[in-house]
Length: 520
Image 1: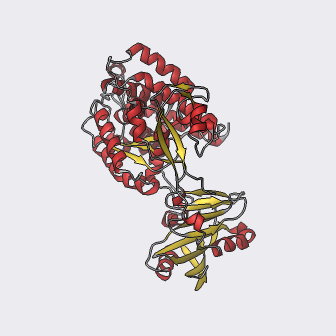
Image 2 (image 1 turned 45 degrees about the vertical axis):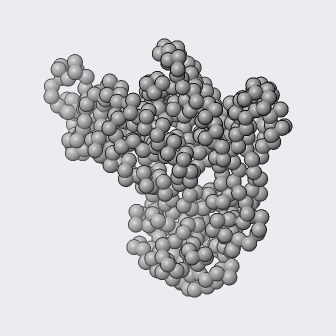
Image 3 (image 1 turned 30 degrees about the horizontal axis):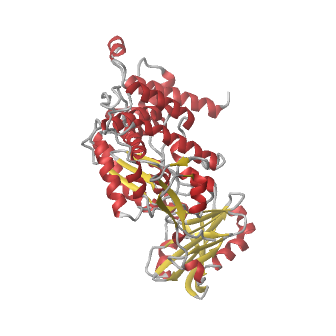
């Protein structure tokens, strides 16, 4: 037996045993002697001792949403505090969509649904994130987020209610804290780690604990349970549950449209959308379609989407080949050809094909390059090399070399701080020390390419936006696309409208198109 696999298997058995016996069913609890972990076994003695402190706070109450006994190490107050603590991190790293009217709408709709749940007293908070990815997720304590990407692909208020209901279900069923509790027993502490030492995590760490908590993976049973609870809250809110299967159709089409490589985050560990649609249809048939006045809210919802940004927003930066251009901040930077790049809310990063070198651009701390350089090179555990003032792209800058210890071995890097438009930009380029010499010239060339953006076309670029059109006559979607051209292909217009090119729409129907000029 492989030693690592055997250890992992043993650890999982211990955790299952601990969580099972921490909250045993009433019948079994009467038969067994009153020990927390069952009969003493010498092979588990040290593990049981190590877990003793953690399990002093175990809660075994019946969950009001699921009706089942639930193991958790976190009180409701702690759960709420986690959401309150991590919400600002989510907002900072992903950004709120800048439309107060839409934000108020999502808060009002979500609050009405949450009021129908078994935990209406939580500080329910609903937000739209400025992210093109099709996604929705929840933090513990009632903090729920949907992206503008998923909004663009929904077709009715009832569909949105189903998505929100599903996320409310994760919160009412306490799935996040349940998963975290199990992980804490398994790991003796939830490790959120970084590739570098904790005192140097600012060098390469661009994802916060809040984001890692947001994307904590649920099991399939949790997802099915959230689907059932979402249906429950739709019915209680008087929304037509027959709209929810349409969401799974959309998710399936988004996945296929991406060639299987761009699976929406909402599906990352879920049962596949086809299975979920079939299961949801069975559940709807069991529970009924709701009242005769059940709300669909198609046209009113679609009109709310008029003007919604579609896809990536080039005002926040875009790539033209390997060159990154940022119209709002008026700068450009050349990344190495063939490197994998990503434009995040708080950083632009690139990784070498061998994954042994990285370039990262962020806004720096400090009022000028000198102050920012002092703060960076003065970090504990970082050994600075030669540091000096220079000019990059005609802009004042401070640049230097550094070395630092990392979990996988030492790293060596370059740090440059450039003053531009009343801000200081931090450019880091680093590699595993054995590979630094191979990348040295490439890294220096990339950092030296930082410059003002002066291209008038790039400076004037605008995002694509959803535009809704009320049909003045009956027509197929293909005819609609010909009469009202979009900046995206017909197949993507079909995806936005939950239709096929040959689908025929009656006069008065509201359809979505995308207008604007793509950034190139």
